[in-house]
Image 1 (cartoon, rainbow, N blue to C red):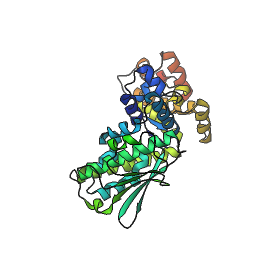
Image 2: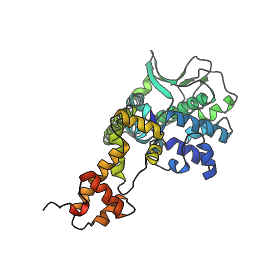
Image 3: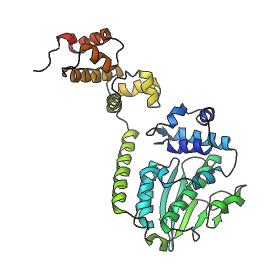
Image 4: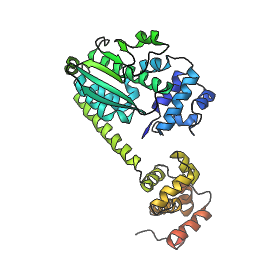
Length: 332
């Protein structure tokens, strides 16, 4: 799974990091400070975990997870936040959360469980229960609480928060952030809320916004599933088409996708193609499209494709089509 860089960007902002601090936050991930500003960048769970550990060290205070999550806005959760905030009832909101939480939440799996009088939202760590695990669980409990409070329009007092481990050293700070009783050594992490709350209408419900957010979440879910078993050729061609005039090197391409060049070569080999073949295919297509336009010369097409000079473009064109571009006849 891969996740939006949004939360890492928020950690950097919360810590008020300059560029040097951002490099420390990203240490060991292969990411750079400029990546934090890339709106649509997705990072791996391993990268997210390393950033979380680095953030804890930089913050150097045990309440950091509680502080950060208590200040997260609904907008920080993207279309999932919109889906939750526009749901008709709390029950509908948490059905959506169970289905789509993997779009935004790294390393924690959420499951609903009904008892006679309550809904249990179980938080299952997908990693060891170490300091980072506690950080994630604390952040998720506060986030769940904030989502419920958004719908009910008040502080959530009637829930119960259960934690698998013992009370942390900073347990005395919990009442500042958590508004319901907390229980420790419970064997699992869960938020338990009365069933009666599930049918409470959401004052911010909006059917149109809900449907739009649902469509966005479904689209993101589809994209993530595709990426889990990636078909690399179309992804690379799509990137080349998004950046006309840029001649990507294999190293630049691998860095963009956060894999090594050797790994990318292996992926493409499994698909029976090389990067040079994909690049030639796309450049040849673009060259023909441009040459069909009377306003273009060989030199202007070379420049538009990203070549330093027209000579290199002429050689490439002849390799693609067997004739130089000067002999290409525009369709009449």
